[in-house]
Structure formats: C-alpha cells, structure tokens
Length: 256
Image 1 (cartoon, rainbow, N blue to C red):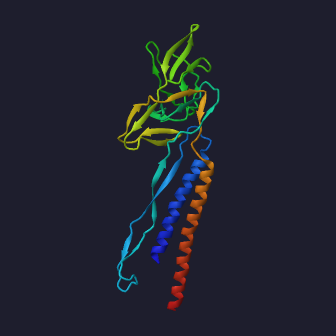
Image 2: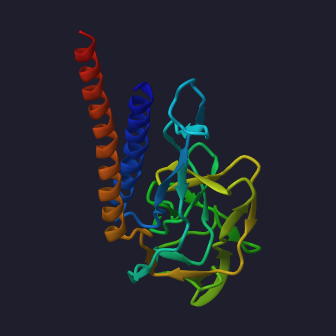
Image 3: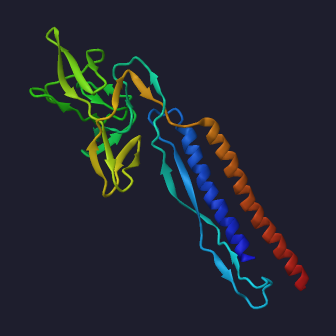
C-alpha cells in the first residue's frame, strides 16, 4: 500500500515539474531568441518481491518505485526569422550567440538580437549590457559611436559606418559557440554562460541578419498537447493515491 502512495506522489511531482516547464515556454512564446525547455523523466529503482508465500508462480515479481525528473533540457533549434527593418535588430541564421559585457563586468551570451543604441552611442542589448565588438585598427569603444541608420552590418558580421562622406569598416559583430560539458547554460534575462568545462570558440559558418529578429522556437499547438498529457498523468497519480487511501480504509474496516 505504501508503494502505491509513493508511486502516485512521485508521478504528481514529476508531472508538476513538466507543467512548470510548459508554462514557462508559453509565457516566453513572444520572447525574441527564446529557446524552449523540456523535462526528461527517469524511472526509479525497481525492487524484487521475494516474500514467502507471495503468489508469483515460479518467478520473482518486480515492482517500480516511481518516477523522477532528470533535469530541464534546452532545445537550441533555431526559431523563424522575422524582418523588422530596424537597423539595431539582429538575428543569427545558424548556431551561436552574441557576446555581451554585463554591468558587473562578466562575459555573457545572448541569442536575442533586439539591440539598442544608448546615449553614449554604444550598442547594447535590451537589458543595457554592452555588445562586445571586434574593432578594426584605429577604432575602439571610446572613439566609435553608433546611431540608428548610420551603420550597416553585412551577413559576415562586418560593421560599416558612414564617416566623412564615405563608408568604412570599423568593427565586427562576432558570433560565438561552446563545446563540451553541454555548452551554454541559461542564466536568466535571456543570458547564457558557458557551463563548467566548456570551451568557447568563434562560430564562422553562420550569417548575421541586420533588420531581423529570431522568434522563440516554440510550437504553441505542441505545448498545449503536452500540457494536456501532463495534466492527465498528474490526475492519474492523484487517482492512485485516492484509490490507495480507499483500499486502506476498507482494510481498516475489515480489521474491526
């Protein structure tokens, strides 16, 4: 009887976490560059029933001890690209991330390219983190200012600035990726950081699309289907606990 209660409880806990992940995906369906998460399940240890007199014919009986989640897994599949026509919007056509410098001086990585130009003429993300560029000789962060519609970026990430009546290449907008130990992990606020042991490298076989944004890689219909499935599994776990409680009550009545 205790086994039924435990199995039902573990099923409810696991499917509640699944529902949490689905609700998080749906809440971020409009977040640029968002990558959906999924929850993986794993069965717990099985036990062999070898009790004397247990009616299992000539074979031992095996019983499961429930289910648990093994963690949240992020799907880095690319989302669709939408043209905005805004010069400070960027999308990566392929794998990789842009690198930013956070307010505490740490390196982080973003997939969302809805950038802005701050009051100092610096390219920043929606949270104010500075986009890290590779400047050409003679140009640096201090002597180069960007303003909307005064610069262009080609698909190789090369930045050209209108200057003294001409067009000059002043910097590059590089794309990075990571390999080893699952690569990047989400930090929050659309930021990612390399996991322990990961090696960051520059991703070259990608295209940078100015005037585009990447949509979240979420299939709304699939998320609602998964939600119904998880809700049903949660209800079945609850029903198992209720049934076990009713059986327990019947046993107690028989003992009186």
